[in-house]
Length: 94
Image (cartoon, rainbow, N blue to C red):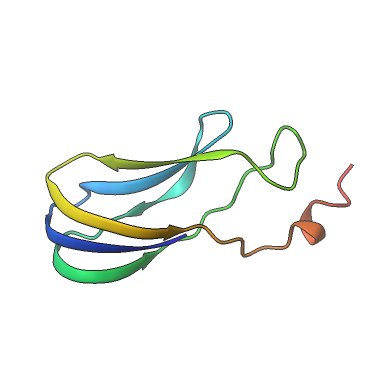
């Protein structure tokens, strides 16, 4: 996952993104928006998508932006990109 963030003033651990699977369980790690003041900065993180109960190649998930402190931050261009190969890891599983 990548995104661009710009902060006027953000406290430490004040804003993060959380992916939640179809059972409402959080997928970790979370992506934390860095503290401080800065111009547009690319932020990235990786997570492993859990297997879907429906055994589909796509797994339903929700993305949450959570604020737990003082922040004045702009977020743009969130992208979630597949990095693994479903065909190799899941296709032959009974």
